[in-house]
Length: 456
Ligand code: GLN
Image (tube, rainbow, N blue to C red; front, side):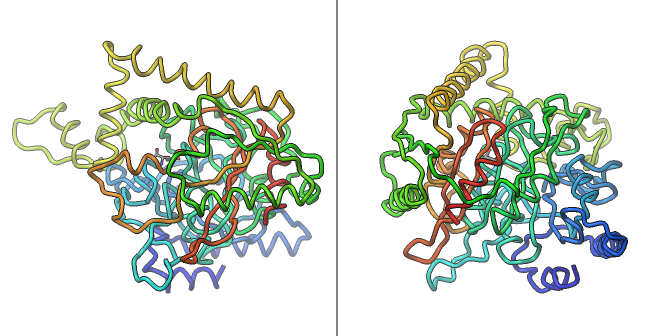
């Protein structure tokens, strides 16, 4: 804990931690020592970790990297952080992210973006750690903490993991409680661990998940011993390679990464099968209707009355002015754009044309996966991202679609509620990490982690 705290002090330039909690960390570390002395050894005992700013942590600023939550300190602890602390984990502080988890580069954060500790060749260009869990990824990659929590609505654990050469798993929807995790798009949001290795991810995921009566979508299922499932034996597993993911304009290095990953799995005894997920090309548009729709509804609560920032009013201005000014001042551009898109697609005249149609597409995407799993496929292998980490400012704010295209390989998993993991799979020609993604059957995270382990 002390080593991490001093690393955090000296690594300020990465802008990964946005609120440090050294007093809490030291108290938790002492308590962990006491537990060990009493012969207790819970899974995360004394392990210093970082918490994404999207998690409510009691008495500690929890702002979702938004100015609208300025000064907000929750009265309560999220279920996931409670579970991690019960398992002995030590909280070093809160981690940077895109505002309300909307983004793929960490550039929408009110704190300014976190920075990727990796460099492209010997260029000085600062690179994005990805988003939205960019602070978590940068902190783990730079050894500021042993592990971090992330959340993933459309790829926000897997894409930053791939950009920084670490492991990140989004579990099956319902595996981890959403209680106390600030909502973005409730039918897609899932939390998960971001770690250096698949083994660490297995241990931390087990500590994070389990049924929670406070989240009505939380699954009442036993939590397996994920670590015990890391046998390294994947003989006879059927791995699907979806032909629709081989998109036009795919970078040769990404294609090679994918082929090499398939070869590694084949060498380990798996059977590689070409599969088809025919509705893949509709996933990104469906996601960018459903996610903003749910966000516009979830973010309606930030009205200046209940939490955080409240705008100053001029003489004669009333409550409507207060709402309007507070939201204009408190929300950044990307969040405002999503709220407007979401409100539009949910409005009476357009609900059927956009929102309902996107929901129907979502069902078709889910069915694609059900069909391949029914054919005996155990997991699906794809690249995690269309490229290695890009430079900060390289994707222009005026063309959000360019940024949205980053999520092309990751959003299908959220729409279908499936588990997905990103594992580091080598470096590109300029020495930047690239990640592979494995998609698993629902509730089969143990199997998925074991297959991912064989790619390490
Ligand atoms: N990049 C995607 C978005 O901006 C995904 C974000 C996430 O998973 N939270 O919506």
